[in-house]
Image (cartoon, rainbow, N blue to C red):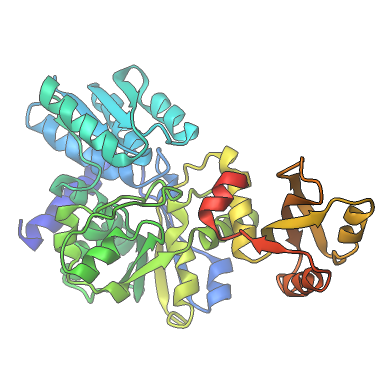
Length: 419
């Protein structure tokens, strides 16, 4: 498809989307602008009917199939949550039957919202632990039942629908200069659609920066290798953007960028960003939805005085995950640590140990791991403090008293077993 045809198709997709919802707001955020010394706008894709941009691509794909006469067709999709909700919303809008395949690990909030959006039009099948398991199941169902498979990102019609975000941004900014766009990357549908629209629309293109979770850097890895690369394993915490391999079609568009254009967001820092936006701005974001905002920490020396648009990509957050988010943020900030230590089994030993704690140190976890020990007991200890600089002094006191300890805060295997 030529660039002019692509942009015309994006315009048609955006026009059709108005049957579902008005354009999402582009808001100048005073808090972030002041913090980073720039004009920072949030494109609020968390305010679509399904609280993510995914509805755009799913709707555009199905709209074209319906226009081609597939009024009685069955549809199916695979999704960790946001694409499923957009798919379900579109199925009910068009009055067609759909089946959604989701990982068993999908947050319950996303499963329930998919049911709400789809109503009687959609069935939900939970299968496997990862997206790839669902993708294989959905493709098998499609081939067996003759259902139309609606991909989450790797299709021209999906890319075209997601690109409508870029068109809205241009219309909303008017003549204001746009220096930089920061957007998340999972499968790459949004990133490729927006970059393609901006790069060849007839105006100076803004600089583009992309953000992936540090536990699932499929785009950056593919750029580094010069070819599509499947990651052997990923961290699924950022469930809306954690994919083992970026889509083939998006990658062809995006391979003109370099690895330095792709920023990685540490999961702990991302949790900080989520809490900051919730507590200061009252904006509820899922991990994937906060990726672009989180990247400001990596860009703070480059963006002063510039106009920056951040794509806020999703607000489907299950508040049952909030304790985990707080925990990760505390550990990332160095305000909470976990230890295994050996404590003498004698009267007064616990009192002596407690006297080693500083005035800002608080025991968050204390558990004997081996209660039958005669001379020494192994203890799982969690400590929170108000200042990360308190920990070096505390550990010096442990060593001075001859207390043997091991810091397991960042030992993922041991931490997963014990914490």
